[in-house]
Amino acid sequence: MAMAWASYLETGIEVIDQQHMRIVDYINRLEQAIDGADQRAVGRVLNELEDYCLSHFAFEESLQQQVGYKFAAEHKSTHENFTKRLTKYRERHKAGEDVARQLHAMLGSWLVHHIKRDDMAYVSDLKGGIEKQSGDWLTRSVAGFFGKNA
Ligand SMILES: [Fe+2]
Ligand SMILES: [Fe+2]
Image 1 (cartoon, rainbow, N blue to C red):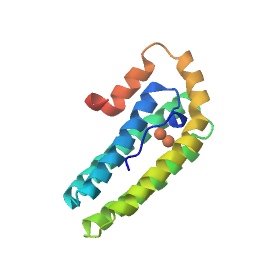
Image 2: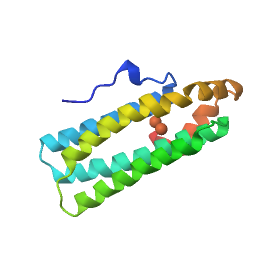
Image 3: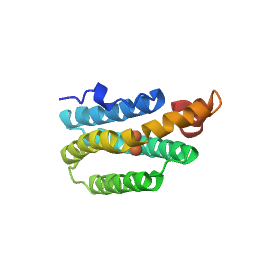
Image 4: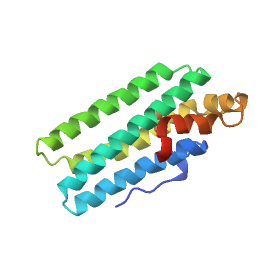
């Protein structure tokens, strides 16, 4: 069953929510690849998902630093641990192992847990920071990390 976006996942910061929705899309594309028993598609989604997550993480980390978020270092290491797990899945997939279902389950639960527990924790600091910055600060930051893919 496709993972649905839900209001309890909303941070209220539009650019962040859009990025999280895009990660949900990747998780659903992975499910389609599983349903189609298409290992090449699994590999493609895995690569794109990893790329996108790295941009999203770098974006969040940069905003946190710029607003002086107290737990920026902890948040960064949570991202890094997740990235390491993704890399291991990618390596196992490359070695011919069918990791897609396991990966799919991990992604869904990690994302929900991370947004609810870790991302929500920086929201009020970030919102406070946004108010202090000049007009297009967020837009410029998005462009810096996502370029044309924003
Ligand atoms: Fe996030
Ligand atoms: Fe995060």
